[in-house]
Structures are given as C-alpha cells and as structure tokens.
Image 1 (tube, one colour):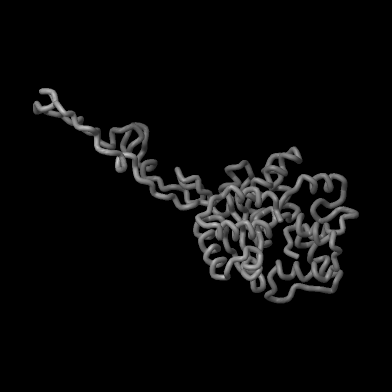
Image 2 (cartoon, helix red, strand yellow; image 1 turned 90 degrees about the vertical axis):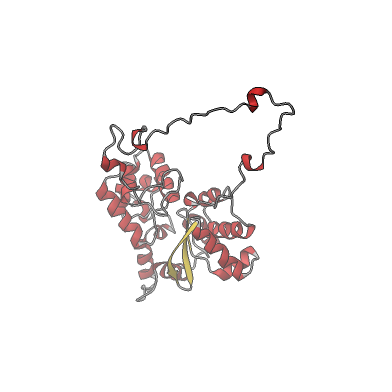
Length: 305
C-alpha cells in the first residue's frame, strides 16, 4: 500500500460510490509509483461489488484519466493509478438568466418609455484588429496557426498527459540524454512515469539536497526506476545504493538485477514469455519471507502478498 497514492486519491470526486471504492482498492494495492495488478475477483472481494460493477467502474476510471491499463501479468491486468490526470465530467447547470423570473412591468409607463427610440448598435471591431487576434501587430502568421503541443497539458483544462516523456523532463531542467536513458530504464521495468511518481522523485531529490536533474542522472547510471534519498546515503557509505545495503535482507527487491540475482541463488530463471512481475512474485514466494518481511515488502515495495 502506498500512502502517497492513497492520499492523492481520497479527495477525488467520482460519479458513483462504486467507482470510488474500486479506485481506492487499486490505490491500496499500488506502490509509490501507482503500479498494481489485482485481479477482478480480488477487487470484487474487497469492495463487495458485483463483477460487472467492478468492470464498469474500471472502464469509467480509465475513460476519465484516474487510472490507465498497460498490459497483463499472468491473468491480471496491470494498472497505473494516476490521480493527477483525473478529469471528472462537468455537470450542466442552468444559467441564472434561464431560471430568473421576468422583470416586473410598470403600471404607469412614463412618456419616455412609450416614445420610440432609435438605438445605434456599436460596430463590432474585426477580429484581426483585436489585441492578440490573428493578424494583430506583433503576432506572426506562424504563431496564429500554431497547434497546441500534444505532449503538454491542454490549455484551460489543467489535464496532464497520462505518462510524462522526455519533453516534460527537459522542461524540468533534466538533460535530454539523461531523460532518455532513465525513461528507457522505466520502460524496461514497465513503470510509466506518472505525475505522482515524478513528484515523488523531486521530493526525494530535495531531501538528498540535489536538483531533480541530478537525481535522474544518478538513477539512469544505476538503472534505478525510481529515486530515494536513502539510496544516496548508502551509496556514499559504499554500500551500493539501491542494490541493497549490508544487513538489508530485502535489498535485492529494489532493482531488477537484484531480483535476478536472488533467483539465481534459488536456482530460478525467468521462463520464456514470463512477464517480469510474474517472475518477481515467483522469486519472492520461493524466498520464504517471514511475516515481518512480507509486511515490509507490501509497504516498501508495493507487493500484493
């Protein structure tokens, strides 16, 4: 369970209680980057809803940007909870003019009210002469015909893309090559960079006292999908950062290379066509974790055990 994702989802206003229940169930299963893969049967059990109600709620949440689906692991679909991109439908309300009662009529109109009047309507100024319009001074034809950037938020809606890309990271001060390398690492680990995950990285970079761009460079060099200030401290002490510190019995869970190494120790290898999350769960199951270790794996690594 990720308290970061749960806290971001609680304020969201869905259309029905069933949609909110399914959203919170997904958030409860997600890691700090919003990734989870609970089965429909599991969500039915946790929300006390019917299978049809759960599936309808998932479709609604995907349509309005609260979650996204990205492939399958085993028999379950992999979801990413994206509360920052949630855009609920706007309800239509009648305008005050439509519902307002007609103005009262004077019982005794004055002569001026009954006398005919000639009204001269102001001549509307052409669009090209208005400030900021096409053809206005200082606005070139190229600027007037420019299309909105598909990789950024839509103007006026505040809707962010479901997954951030190189362009958004460069705008945050990250060097282009470092952004490309890091996003490649995340893609290989099937972890799209959501707005929630990026805010977490920036917060951890601030804790470590480094710019976000430097955190991305360090993560790319070490093949880390995420970034934690504590990993920097361990790296400075010579313990290898995210690969696991001395005495950390679950340090191998932090990276894919650590999971593969743990599998080698248990004489397990990823089968052909086996998804990475499925292999990871198989290695965890064979590791014989204690109840305390399982609780930590759920809290720190977002595993559904």
